[in-house]
Each structure stands twice: as C-alpha cells, then as structure tokens.
Length: 350
Image (tube, rainbow, N blue to C red):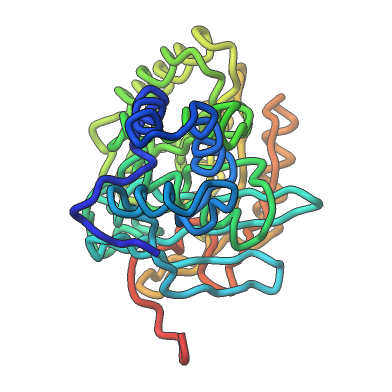
C-alpha cells in the first residue's frame, strides 16, 4: 500500500484528468474507462490490483500517483456480526468506523471528523475534543475499507460516527455525492443519512440540496435546560429555532426527518420530558428513534429501564408520532451510538 505524502492521490483526478493522463502516457483511450472502473467502482487500493492494465502503464502510474488509503490499526468483531475499525490516515490522524451486516445488506457508520467539538455529555467521541475535520475522500475511504473487508457491496451509509457533519458541511456533501454516484458506489440518496446535533445553518443548507439525502437530528430532550446540559455545543440553537428550521426543511423537501432520542434514566425519561417530546413532535412529519443509552466509561449517565422506553413509545404512537425502539449494534465492542472515540484500542496482539 502506498503512503507517500508527496505524490498526488490518483483518486483526486477528474474524468478529464484521467482521459488526458491516458493520452499523455501513450495508452489507448479505452484505458481511461478501465482505470476509472478500478478507482471508483471496484475501489482498488493499489495499482497492482488493476490486472487488466499493462504492467508498464501500472509502473508509470505508481511513479506519479499514490493511494493515500487509511491503514487498519485494529478491528473488533461483535457477537452480532458488526465490525469496528480503527483506521489511521497518512498524517497519523485516526478515526473509528463501523460495518453492520443485516439480512444480505451492509450498512456503514462513518466519521466526518476526528474527535468532536460538541461535547455532548453522553458521547465518548467528544471527551478529547476535536483533532481535525476529514476530507470527502477520507470519509469515502471508510466505506471502501468496510466493503473490502466484508467482500460485499455497501447498501447504506449513516454519517453518525465521530464528529458533527454540518461542522464539515462541504466535505460531507462531497462524500455523499461520491457515494451516490451511479458510476461509483451507486448508493441511493435515501439510503445516505446525515445526523446532526441540530446545527441550524447546516439544516437550512441541507434542505437546498437537490438530492434526497436523509436527515437525522440528535434531539435527546425537548426541554431546553435539559438539552443544554446534555448538548452544550448547540446551546445557541434553541429548540424553538430548531423546530422552525425542521418545519421549513419538511416544507421545502417533503422529506421526513428522524429524531434520535437516547433514553437516560432520571434525566430525559420523566413525565415532563415525555410531555415536552410529544409537544415537539405532534402534528409534524417526523420519526422518533428511541435508543437505550449506551454506556461510556467516563460518564455517570445510565440507560432508562425498558418499561419506560416502551411507555414513551406507546404515548408517542397514541399522539400520531411514528416511533421505533432502536436496538444498538456492536455495543459489546464499544461500536454503538455515542461510544466511538479516536484512540488506540488496547487489544493484545492487535
């Protein structure tokens, strides 16, 4: 695997660049299509894999270009089949990503930043702050890595890993479009979901995109004081303004946002909290995902008992709000929601 920082990444070339390169190196025009198939459909990570290209051509490409693909430092496998990867980029930055197989389908949870600046009380990612944002190619490389490891086509991607996607808006959208490209990963727009803490300017920009990408919002409380404590990074985006932005999003796109609600014992599972959530959702187009809080080592917060989660689901359903209790995947390897962190995992022999 090539890891030079001096050579340009071959995958950064446009179609016109590749056509020009093929001509410059004296290759027939059809080589451009072959090269693009290896790069963007077969997700090759080295020139040696491109077996239908002449050896001399591959050597010329090796001299000029690199594959700055991440290196897998650690892989953990859950009892439910999920796999969590700690991936390191050439500059030493590392992130975690998760592959989740289910009934012939493969979903990937990607990170958009190394670390996170939002500081949510229930999330391990933000405990060490933000290192840097990722490029679109670094985000897409996580999907490619999972696809290669499983030997399967990825059918959906959730931008719910480390980081706040709308704090890295432009690169996030570039990554979405690469994954949606019919000549690339060809993942349908509705199977590409971006989760935000509620960054309102990002929601407004997202509503203007022509593609039908899916929006998820980490809500976690519809009481302002509780939400401020749980999610200090979005204090300035009040629930009133968030509600208005989401209704505007629905009016512009006709699409239904989902709300992520991690159930935390004694914090957001009380009767006043439940009433506030019903008021926030009732009469609007939305879907609520109730998630039993996943334990994180540095947090004292604990998950709500299942009877409270089921009671809230019944109450929301009674008021016409579509609600699902979501089973977390990979929590035995700290791969579930709120458990991702960019650190060296201490695994013997890894």
